[in-house]
Image 1: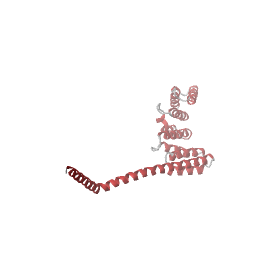
Image 2: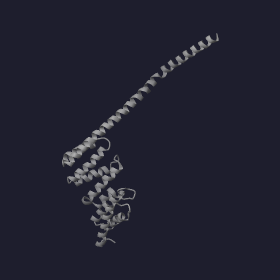
Image 3: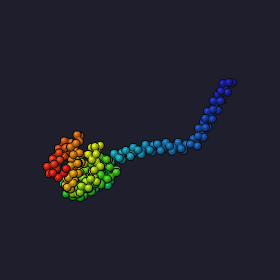
Image 4: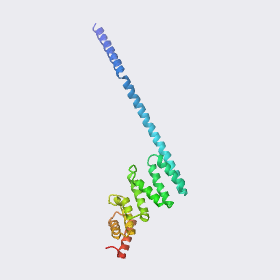
Length: 223
């Protein structure tokens, strides 16, 4: 009899669990299904995005190489058009790289004004990596030595002429040359002296700075 009671109790418990499961499924089944669908769709979407991003980056790389080839063949107008298109709809870092190369093509064409504007724009692009921005500003500054004023050069690179910046001595050299060209001999001497005093300055940059310091000293134009 006790066995029959135990069997009966187990059957009742199983029915209760079954009823509870059915009730819970009726109440939450749609939510469970929705969550499962979201997980599947989310995973598929992420994989799809990875493929799309890789595919686009690969295409942008091919287009960048094709534009470089045009530039190497001195097909400057075609190269500029290709770089311009890549700047508009390329992926990853290629739009910034395309703009930098476009500036180089403009420079090789003799369009210093256009190249300066292009490099300066990259230098101000908050979306571009800092290293690329600094390089672009440096390119603009060196062109401005012959095509602008000392003040314009200073706007581009004076904030870079500090010990913590890896391009500090290049910035100082650009500032020194621009100041010398503008007749600001005392400022030029100061910039070149900073290079000469910096033990970490590249040897070629330090040698050029010393030559300029010697020229300034022999000219008697600065204290």
